[in-house]
Structure formats: structure tokens, C-alpha cells
Image (tube, rainbow, N blue to C red):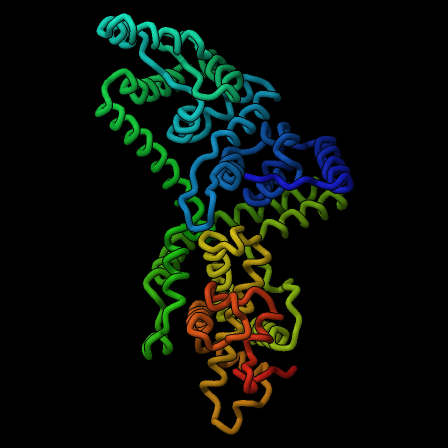
Length: 471
């Protein structure tokens, strides 16, 4: 993960926010009252290296959310996100700065699979008796090689186990955590060492057993990643493989039924799961909103304004605040506002669809080898869906009216009849098949990234591809 450098002004502002938070008389209540996503955004804003006191006060749910957002990485969008052990070391060191026992208490609250998986990236745990037996079975030359390798490694003996560092950075932090767990969470430590030793034992055996240990370690990683995906799906995130599959599907032309009221299986599955989680989520939101309401009375107005900004920055989609303001985009946004005034239920459905599509791009798409930021993904979704809506307006019009400017009324009518995901697919397939030759990148991506690209896509060398828009 590449961390962007912050300006001196930004550092000063962040430090000011942190200092004012720490000076609050009831900081623990204030921090614990924050919604989990707002807390994670606050940690990002402050910087993990400076957030030790906040982490010490956080609830388990807040800490898990922050881990989910920061610790799992992939080199490219659409690839499996795996635990970044180096980043976990940074978090562990920050927690330990507050105090070894406090750090052990926080770690003990987390899912045991996750803790074992994270430690397995730092430590190799060997059963001491099994190691001695294995060493007695090998010849002198091999014994000397193994003994020399172990002698040069960072090691620690503990209750019949030998802990060996897989990496030097993180060894001190991991050992400090193990010792703190030994003092205050002995039963948990025993379970962890047993699990890690089962993985490590196969290093003492032949290549076939080595293959087994790699499979067992992969299984633990998959369990941890699956639990994270379950948590994130309840917040509207899209699994990377599903995102990639949807974007591939979107490039293909829709048949007649699909252009009617059809929703593809991937999107149907997403919204079916979203509906199943709705009651749980609504209860959680109500609880969090009440907590936020309670916390507002504790916060000075200046700090509350800054936390409101953090909360806004953490949103995955911000259609109402979009900066896209050229003609076609402005008319489309006016149509959305019309729905919000007259048909709130339908507007809510479309907003959910926009959020889904935005998360699809965040999880499964790259531009020039880099992932999109949330704002960029939201802008691309709006531009692409707008283009799909414009194509639909043209298809609905009589031939003599096809060059007339688009209107808010026409856009609103399309939004009533077509879901945003279907409009996205209509646009993406049209772009890939060459309906908008002036936007060259769109033929590969199936996307329009901005209002300016939307305006270009609506033109062809011979005149209007789809009608222009009017206010």
C-alpha cells in the first residue's frame, strides 16, 4: 500500500483535530459513539501512527472495521485481497505503544482465526520435541545446516514451542504481544501456539507434507478473508470476482428481454442479499444514529464539524454533491432531484443501484493501472448511466424528434422504467461496440469517466449520436 505524503498544512490540521479530541473530558464515550465507518475514516485522517490512543478506546466493532479497510490489499483491482502482514505490524506496534497489556486485551477481542493468520505471517512455531526427534533422524551434514540456520534466526523458547521469526520487522512486536498474552490471556495463547505449531510441524517433514502445510495455511487465510467479505457485504461492498464478472457482462450487448425489465443474475444476487441483511443493517444504523446523536452533545461544535467532514469523506457515493456540471450531466442530475422530490421510494432504489455500481468499479476496475478513488468511481458511474439513459431516450423517440435536446422529463421517465444497472449495461455495451468512436478509451473500458467524456460520446462525425440536453 502506498501512503500519500501529507502537506505541512494538512499535518497541522490533523494534529489539531487529534489534540482537541484527546482533550475532551469524556473521550472514551465520544469515540465509542462514532459509527464504525466514521471511526475508520477518522483513523485514516489522523494517520495510524498517531492514532494509538483512539485505537485503545475503540470498540471491537470499530477496530475490526478499521482493520477490514486498511489491512487487506491486492496489487490490482479485481484480484483477491489478502492480509498485508507488514501493515499489520504497523498497527500492532501502534497498539503496543499504548501498553503491552492494553494491546493484548485489544487483540484478544478479535476473531481467533484472524489473529492466528496475522501471527503466522510473522512467526514460525515449531514443537520443540518434534524438532529434536526430526534432527536425530537426519545425517550430520544436514543436521549442521539446520542447526546453523536456526542459530542465526531470531528465536524464543516458550513452553515446549520454538518461535522463529519469519521476518525481522515485526519480530519484537509479535514477541511482546505473545508475552503479554501469556500473562493475561493464557488460554488464548495456548490455542494460538497449538494452531501455529500444527502448521509448522510439516516444515519438519518431506515435500508432500510441506504441500499440506501450505494448503492448511491457505485455508486459514480463506476463512479470514471470507469473514471479512461477509462483514463488508452487509455494508454494500461488492466481492472482487463478482465485480469483475459484472463488468465483463456489461460489455456484451443486451438482448430484447434484458432491455425490458431484466436484471442480470449477479446484480439480482447482490440485491437479494442486501434485502436479507436490510433489517439487521437498519437496526444497526438506528443504534449507530442514536449513538451519534448522543455523542453530539459531548462535542464542541468545531470538532463536530470536522468529524462531519470525515463522515462525509467516508461515504462510498456522493451523488448529490457531484461536481459534474455540464449540460447533459446537469439535466440528468435534475431528473434525479425530481425523483427525490416526487418519488422518494424510487429515488432510494436508484441511489442503492448507484452505490452498487460505484462499489463494482472500486472492487473490479482500474484506470491506467491504478484503482479509482470513490469520487472518481461515482463520477464514472453517473456519466456512464447518463449515457445509457440518453440512448434510451433516443430509442423511445419518434424519428423526427431524435435531434431535439434532452429534457429533465425524458430522463426522469427513463429512470422510472430502467434500473441504473441496466442503463449502465446499455451504455457499456454501446461504448465497447463502437457507438461512440470519439471516446477511444471507452471502447476498452466500457466506461465514461467524466461529464466531458459524456458530451464527446454523444457526438459522432456525422452529427448527434444521441440528442443534446436542455435545462
